[in-house]
Amino acid sequence: MDLETDRKTFAEQGFIGPFTLWEPEEMTAWWKTQRKALLDPAKSARKVFDNPVNYDRHLDIPGLSSLITEPEMVRRMQALIGPDVLCWRTEFFPKNPGDSGTGWHQVETYAIGETSEGMLEATEHSDGVPMELTCWVAFTEATKENGCMRLIPGSHRQWRYDEHAPMKWNGAARDNSFFGYNYEDIKIDKNWDPDAQDVRDVEMRPGQFIIFTARTIHGSRPNTANRQRMGHAIRVVPTHVRVYGGMTGFDEFGHHFDLARHGCVLVAGQDDYGLNRLAQHNAWGDRFTPLDRMAV
Image (cartoon, rainbow, N blue to C red):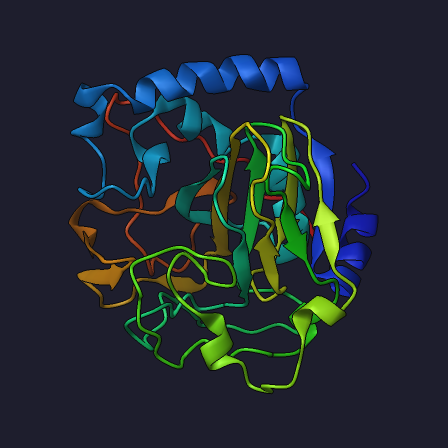
């Protein structure tokens, strides 16, 4: 694990990887077990958010609880944002045969959709250090044919979209939209064409992952194959970032999300700020065990 190379590559590109967490056979077997848990009605009743969007299932599915603390991923996160790391959200990104591509988008504070209020607020700033990261894990194969992710290297250094401009959800995912939100409407320079840039298609085998800042402009291809693509996003911040500050809920993708049961998970280091409510246990009483601090 060459963390210094990771830092240099990330500074240049806004993302690193793919890296191998597990071999394809191991990931395929593991994902089969997690799918059974996700489909269990008893476990679904314990979801943090009572709606069809599967946010934060790491808080009630033991396998996903373990995944977010995998050292192979967390050590790289620490190298990029510092020794103390909180997981504030996880989410699934399925793309079924025939599903459209996801349009280009760029965020940082996650002020998405109906509100211009960000979900993340940094209380400190360091040059070259992002306030958020996403680790995107391939649970299945991700290819150009079945909808792999696409990123524009270096785009994290310039804002091309105004994430605080309000957008209206149109109720349908279609090409060039972000699950019903049209980022074309909030493009700062209407003449700038993301498709004319140096676009990188990131193909991955099951068990591989990439790490990127959501400031790096990204999207995905449509699924023109006869097999599902399933990705899982683990979203993390340094402990100085306030998550959902003062919010009791939010509206997104046509649903209301009540934050009464939400909590962040300390996956590395320690929390000296105390800005966020922490989830110490999941529904089965298993403890989340953070990695030790790492000198960065």
